[in-house]
Amino acid sequence: MEENRTDDTQKVKRSFSAWLGELREFMKGRFSLDEDKAQRDEVVASVSKGVEFRGVNLWVLIFATMIASLGLNVNSAAVIIGAMLISPIMGPIMGVGLALGINDFELLKKSLRNLALMFIVAIITSTVYFFISPLSSNSSELLARTVPTTYDVLIALFGGLAGIVAYSALRAQEKKVDGGLAVIVDKKIPNRATPVVPPGAQSLRHFNAHCTGCQLCVSVCPNQVLRPSGKLMTLMQPEMSFERGYCRPECTKCAEVCPTGAIRLTDLAGKSSIQIGHAVWIAENCVVNTDGVSCNNCARHCPAGAIKMVRRDPDDPKSPRIPAVNEERCIGCGACENLCPARPFSAIYVEGHSRHRTV
Image (spheres, rainbow, N blue to C red):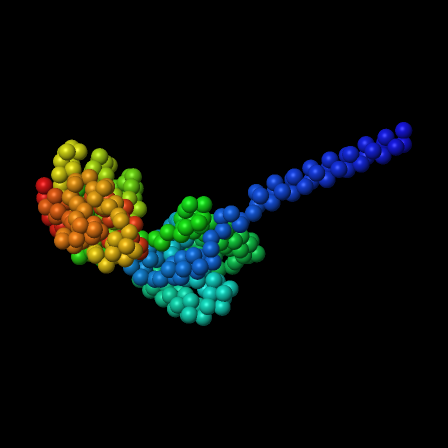
């Protein structure tokens, strides 16, 4: 009887130990960050890029400072928090933290320099705003930010930790493909002499005169082709860029939501025949020349049939084929630029036209 009881006790202990082991493995798998962790070089490169303070980041900081100042004027916590969310000031702050962690003195100097510049811009912007619209009294939101508490420190600490984990996982998902065996370099925006604006804009002059920068077209673009301009004269007005997608002939969403007539299309057939730009081939970027491989992505995916593959040396039947662009037939949709495998700059890109025409 005593032996049976001892055997039962041992069985219970073994079952409990096995259950604890399974539970430990389950929890380890759930809380492990190894699978989503980005490579060190990728994180360093991405944070270093985010430290830059010019163009869009500069204007976003100015607008965020104005929004925060308005929030203090109207004593609204929601408005102030909104300004914090869009502010790009976290870029240099993350750069300082990373530089201290990996002993990168050059990154530290660059981050501190840009952080100081951000503070100067923010102070100047807020000074101008409150000179025009001064505070009549000390609001509760203003007073709450002059006496930080332990809870504020904890909020900053856990918010920073959450940002580090989420940022690292995001970069890993963006950069890795094929089970993490290959890393794709992000495409860079080419330097276009003339910006590309959507079909139906008629011309740059018409588009710039009628567009209010409301961002409705940007928000509905299914292929993320439209994005706000960072140029001073056309600030926040949409421009087309093809790193993430291209302008599909069957899509007219931007014209459907435009409230001012800056983008106006009558039908799909009309869109498919509008030339908003033309493709330009850069021989030194093409993988046919740089890597010695065969490629016809641009010609295969051109919806207008404006690109044909021709022999690089017409007199040599074994010469590799390179793209030849028929500028009169090209509509500037960006399919060739988007699907070009060359990195970081595409070997073929779209140059905009100041006045659109029908082909």
